[in-house]
Length: 238
Image 1 (cartoon, rainbow, N blue to C red):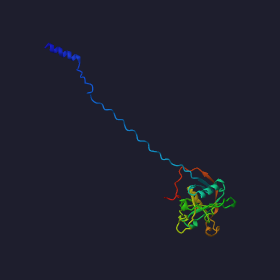
Image 2 (cartoon, rainbow, N blue to C red):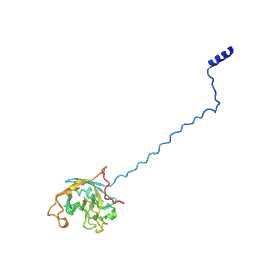
Image 3 (tube, rainbow, N blue to C red):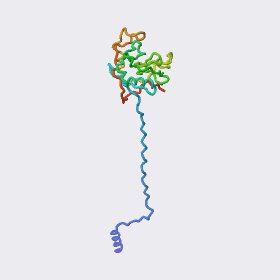
């Protein structure tokens, strides 16, 4: 009995038994999986800069800014810019409003109403069926009598006048060359359209359409492209 008690005492002093696990027989620790790499960033679309010319027409009634379609109508645009860059457009007049034609054919017309020596030679006609442009509301179009005789005069349209397009049914097949459009100052163009009319000035279809007083273009200068310039309507949808 004494021997058994001594044996239990010695076991308690020695502490719990240590179980040795043979090498290679322990639990398997799996390596942690790394998270997948993030997807590559989406490419940022590159927006081509707008290199079309913009011109501010400062008039007696306010400023109208127009954008020129110099790639689609290069001849007519270059002619307009030639007057601008030579400062020959300074002093040109808005002299006509077609209020008498009704709401479907609204435009104002401007040009050299003074010294004819300011005129450059006439330019070749660029029909809309070739340029891909159209005479929509806001369009900047070249005035003419016959194709190829245009010099200084131009229209700003305050309504769609699709009958001015070269492929319009019943038209003359030439139409009026669109070469730009209003991007700001449409309210100024409307004020010119609604300006007083002379009861007697003008001949033929021009009678009842001549502004009195005429509205002067005080300066015409190139300006940078506005950040918020609208897309516009003159380029025909594909």
